[in-house]
Length: 104
Image (tube, rainbow, N blue to C red):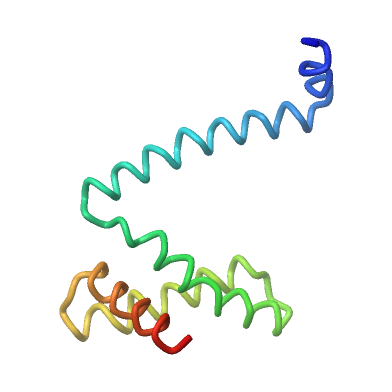
């Protein structure tokens, strides 16, 4: 029985995948706890909704999707909404997501 569980670890990519999963589990829990303590629990939802149009546009244009998502999120939600309104990112992003949900 133990052999069945340890057999996949003979391959290097499985060891890398296990290491990556463990590191992601630790890092995401620490970052998530920090965001909740700082009252920024909605930030993950904001980033997910903000990145999606950038992914679609970058895929359509044939550009790297990670680059498209990063540029779209930064330009739309950080530089255009937050400074002119003189608001923190969290209330602005919550309002934007609520408005997006209303339209759907």
